[in-house]
Each structure stands twice: as C-alpha cells, then as structure tokens.
Length: 447
Ligand code: SAH
Ligand code: SF4
Ligand code: F3S
Image 1: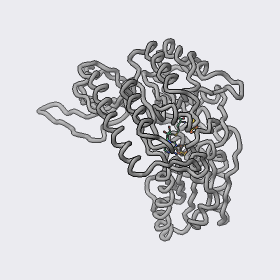
Image 2: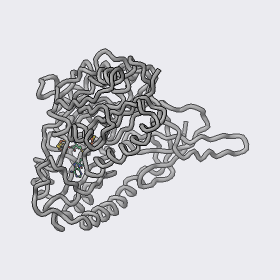
Image 3: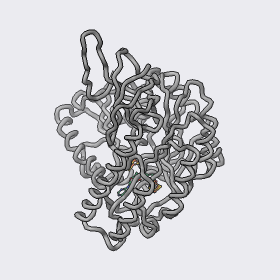
Image 4: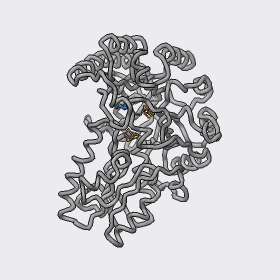
C-alpha cells in the first residue's frame, strides 16, 4: 500500500478532478492520506483564475521542498490550471517536481506515476486532448458523500476578455449522457442524495456534439431512483434558454437556487468583458425565473475594477444589486491574466480604488443577504443533512444530549440545528428557522 496526499486549490471542477485522480490511482495501490510527510505521492491541483490563486501554487511548492528533503523518494505532481498554463516553467522554478500534468490528460496519471516510480524521470505533458476517456472502467467507491459533483462538460469557448479558463481548460466538450447517468447511479448506490452537475457553461451542453440539450439531460437524470436533489453550475446568462426556465416548472428535484454570474451591472463594462448580454437582458431572465419559481434564490459573481470601469459604471453595479437583491455574491477584484486579452487593455484601475469598490459592494450585499435570510425566520424548511456542524456546541441538559447538525435548504442556504439523534447524515429533516445571519440560518428540528 502506498499513500497519496492531494492539495486542491480552485473551483468545483478541481475538486471533481482530484477525486477522479484518487480513483484512477487505486489500482496502483494508492490510498489517500492527509499528511504531507508520510505521503509517497503528492498531487497539487492548481488554480490560475486570479494572480493570488496562482501564487498559492509556488508558496505551497516551497512547503513540499521541505518535506521532500526528509523523504527524497516522494513523487511530486503538479496538475490543474497553473500546470496547463506554465508547463515546464514549473519545473524550472521547482526542480523537485516530477510530473507536470495538464488539465486534459488526467487519465495518463497512473501510467506516469508508474514510470517515475520505476525509473526516476521527469514528465511534462500538457497536451490538449479531447474526451472523458479517463473515467471509463472505474467504479465509484461504495461509500460516498451526501452531496457530490459530477462533471458533464470540460473547457470553455466563451473567451470573456478577463478570463484564463479557455486557455487552460481547452475547447468545450460535453460528456455522453449515458456516462453521466452511470456515474450518478453508482454515487447513489454509495449513499449520495444530491448531485451538482458541473460545466463552465452548462447551457451549451451537448450542442456541439449533438447529444441532447441541457434541459433534456435534466429530464433524463430526474428519473434516477434515489436521487433527491439536482443542482448545477455554472450558467452563462447569454445562453439561459426558456426551456431551462421551463424545467424549473416541471422538475421538482431541481433545487430552488440559480447561480447566474453577472460580472457587472454596466453595459459598457459588460461589452468590454465580451459577455454578450446587457443588463436589461440579465434582469429579464431573472424576472422570468422568479415567475416560475417565486422562492428561487439567486446568487452571482461580480468583478470590480475591470479596465475602464468608471465610478458611474460601478454605481450601475450597485444599483443592479439593489434591483435584483441577490441572496449572496462572490465578488472579486479584477486581476490581470497575461494570456487573457484584458491584460493588454488601457485604463487599468488602481489597486486602492478596486479595494474600496469591493468593500462598498460587500457592505451593500451584506445588508441584502441579511434581509433575504430574515424572510426564512419562523419558516419550516426541509434540510438535507450533510454533516455534524463545524462548531460542535453540544448542549447538554439533565437527560438530553443535543448534537449540532449542518445541512442545506433547497435554496442552498446553510442551516445549523440541534437534534437528539445520533446519525442524521443523508436524511431530510424539517427544521424551524429561529435565527437568520448573513451567511447561515439557525433552527430546531420539528421531526
Ligand atoms: N464559467 C463561469 C465562471 C468561471 S470563473 C462563468 O462564466 O460565469 C469564476 C469567477 O471568477 C467568474 O465568474 C469571475 O467572476 C471570476 N474571474 C474570472 N476571471 C477573473 C479575473 N481575471 N479577475 C477577477 N475575477 C475573475
Ligand atoms: Fe471564463 Fe467566460 Fe468561460 Fe466563464 S464563460 S469560464 S468567465 S471565459
Ligand atoms: Fe481555477 Fe481552473 Fe477552476 S483556473 S477556477 S481551477 S477552471
């Protein structure tokens, strides 16, 4: 038996890919552990979306260098978006890295690890192949989590001007429905109740390959026995079709949440970003979604300080926040990525202006998030339990022991609640919400 340690930086796609790598390394005898020191194999799955994320790779590699001094036969793999972007630049800066593996050749990992462990060698493979072949023939382990990601597409063809993804994840490709359904079924056999379908723009699923549309895929998936909840991420507003909105009317298993990144509320900025929709189109899509699912929670991504963003443009974003009232937001300061066109744009925004705008935006959003969550107070919500709460404030009275559990509502709000039972994981519990905070809800179970 050998030990593998995996450090995953970045988005849900990387989380999925890391699990996939662990799965395909099993036949070689590798078991996942959480100690760098004891590991025979170390995998760093990297992210390049913003400068800060990319820097994490090298600061982390510094730590690995220390560990490797004590255990020189350790094999070090760097994969993910920084690996794809920098290739052999990584081994130049960190010569103790054995394998640099691109985002589209994950299936070759076992072969490379075998090679390097037999005869010390350095392998750099960042070829942009197509396909989902690496998944074939590998069964899910029989025990799994309540909520899991399933990648249905790789790559992106949208070329937003700020974004590195099309360059590091390659062209968009969709996975066969049958392969997706088989993976979901095996996850359900292992105890999964909720899946999140992943792609950079799920709305264009299947179109290139003429497989089936995304709403059609949802209709196929909804019939899988034992699957209770379906989520997906991410959608591009320009491709959000009426058929997908219609699916929220017809598919009960589709959760009450929609993540629809808007990036900016200013038409000038949206144009500069190459997003291909306007503020007005975005608002119209949200109104339509809310007309079929009034309780749907809407979340989004925003970039502040894109090149050329004036105070007036930024104000348009603040006004959009007030108009839509998102349930929550992921907001970022624009970060130059040298492969993306916006890095060459003039009128860059000063760092302190970006910092100030981000703070103003977050302040406004906090108020809105709190207001949106307060609506839940006194309501009874169905909560799918994922785990024990992180903060285990076990309240012990004379004869009752209360454990604190964490789960989510259909609208993807985190709920913490107390319950006397020993194991609630995977069960749907009715919880009366007593207290709303900006990022979570607190309640007591009613069953
Ligand atoms: N495919 C998704 C988003 C993927 S990246 C979509 O189209 O919406 C996740 C988020 O990172 C983006 O929505 C964007 O808000 C942010 N992001 C991407 N590139 C960035 C950059 N150069 N600087 C700052 N934020 C960025
Ligand atoms: Fe990046 Fe745009 Fe593709 Fe999203 S749609 S991954 S933001 S290029
Ligand atoms: Fe980062 Fe790559 Fe995801 S750049 S956000 S890990 S697609």
